[in-house]
Length: 366
Image (cartoon, rainbow, N blue to C red; front, side):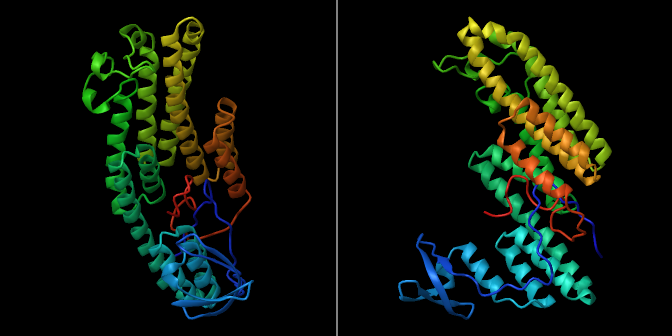
């Protein structure tokens, strides 16, 4: 079966099925960080004989080379027939080179349409393997307190691989992360305030600390009370959009979240003049500005993805451009705009591991 998968935030360069990879690798890099330039004399798939430009001949085992080098060598010695291309794609999946795997599955399908059932079965297995690997990666990130990175990986599973069993656990982990972010909206240790009423002031020992090491005062919390409430509502609506399997429902949730963000930003701007004469308010403003930017940017990218699934390229671009109007230097939005432009210019029908054609955050490779 062939599934039309839309190209969006992480579009990769398309490789046609008739592309022939010449033996043009003229550099190899070892895991020790050494880079050699020259000519490949022989390559049996286990060992490479390489002649440097200085005339020195080196014998390099594959396991001494970087993953990027090993992939290029395998790619360049792989025939263009369907079986060989599918085998290479499977190897790429095992190495978490998901974008490269997609290209080679596509090449395999183009090489022999009579094997489409077999190749599509491989793609289905690849999706499951990718989802499981990403889930374990996210758990490891959470254990290492890399919460932002873990959130992006979990979001990728839920959005790109929603039918895989791992997506259910990923959604549950995202829900827990969402609660942590809500409780830590202006608190130093989220785990201490978990379960407290949303409007309840955290005890002094649980509050976010200032640059001086002192906790923010009760007066500061009261000043930013409405901002915090809008922020928490925004997180809730964003999460609902992520786990909603219906794109129309997801879009509505993301739009509600952005309205919450607008309300929070409006409240902040009303408070901002007070920061000129109040050092504590100025510090709190800097803290709140960062949290709001992160949440709003995430939501706008999710909204753009949802529109791309409906081929609503103009609306997707509008979602990103509005974000850039608010945060013109944000690197995630700038990158999203570039990839969105590439996606909108393509009308390719592909079978892909990921629904939207890859990772917005660049998780396709370790």
